[in-house]
Amino acid sequence: MRNFTFTFFYTFLLLISNTGFAQRLQECSLPKFNQVSLEADLKLNGSGEDIDSIEFWKSPDSSETLMFVTAKGNNLVEVWKYPFKGNQIASLTHTTFQNSPVNGVTVDQNKNLLYVSIGNPSSTISVFSLPDLNFLFNFNRAGANYYTEPNLALLTLKDGSKKIYVSADSTVDIHNPETGEFIQTFAPIKGLETMATDNFYQRIYIPDENDRTGVYLYNPDGTPFFLNGSNVFGENVFDSDAEGIIIYTCPTNNPVDSGFGFIVVSDQKADVTDFEFFDRITLEHLGTLNIIGVSNTDGIASYPYFLPNYPYGIFAVVNNDQTVVIVGWDIIFNQIFNITGNKEINFYLPNYQLYQNYPNPFNPNTTIRYSIPNYIPSGVEESFVQLKVYDVLGNEIVTLFNEEIPAGRYEVDFNASSLASGTYYYRIRSNDFVQTKKMLLIK
Image 1 (cartoon, rainbow, N blue to C red):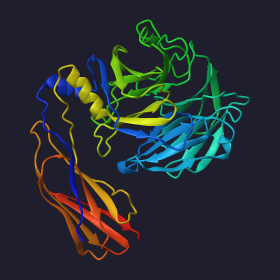
Image 2: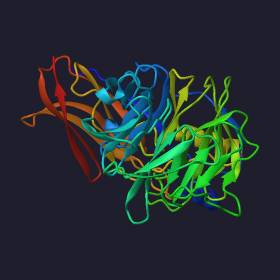
Image 3: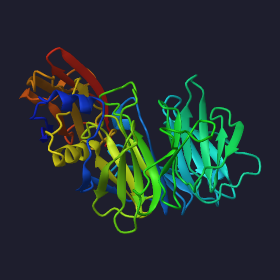
Image 4: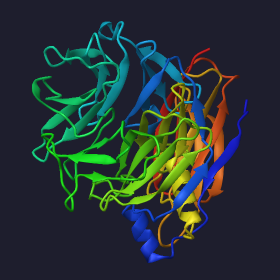
């Protein structure tokens, strides 16, 4: 009746004793690191052809997180559910996609909306609700031609209103994302494809795709944004096309964006793509990341929130128009801080957490994940943890775990081959923490 394995997959052994380093991590400030190379964690090959852009939707339950990947070659959006590997669900298609390249994607996390940009001849933006992906409406500028690679960026203004930006070859259209109303068009100084928006600084960042002259800054209305007399940074950094761009604000440690963080831009080399890091405040070039085996990168994306197995979230990139490659931000940070002589990062787990089992429904195996907090500066504390499974009448079925363990993230595999189909509950107890979740066995 009992057939389960216990896996301890993350431990935290070092304390942060250096106050300056702790502050640097809290503010998401990276040192200069020259160059770092590392292996990918995951490589995902989905149903899309000629894939281009990536975006994430943050679910209230981290195990329900979704990743979207646009595919120009067969006019669809790949949909992946955490933990992503082996978990591509039905692709998103719609009549507005037909015979047109599906290229850009962005998410309004507050409104739970997905925006998809479609190239010519459709030349439109289609809007879907999340997480059910029901079509809501579409919009464009009258007579617009989005060519083959329109991209999207969403900006929240200081008054709470929003603008959505649509790149179309050499121009950018600005719309009201809630109504679709067209506002205006502007022409960036240099050639463009991708964009990123910064809600804190009220800026738009547009890498120069064609001439490799750097990344240009614009105000919300499309006029140049000047910082220290210039509206460009990253001159003499890029060896190839400047493509995908993201902004990392360190929300795991700092839920309220206070302007710290860094910017990452892909340098689209055909052999090994460089990912150039810039300080978000000074715009100074910090260093270059290589992900071994990744080349010709278009879109990049960041999910900068906690996920099981990934305490600081994940960095995702398109590899050669075919696959999505994922690396944990914790791995990237550790490499950067190790190569510059700092101590290893001690990731802070502030809360107990019991996650939804996966898969669910299941037959007959499922995995249950949970995390036990540590405390800074007192160090890693051990907790007595009890994990049990019950039937709908409250009868105990099995004890999955019952011992003292240090802080970290854990998983238990539960085999229910001897049980009847139906609803079961699993409950964790540790110190004063108690949490119960439901799972469904279908045979």
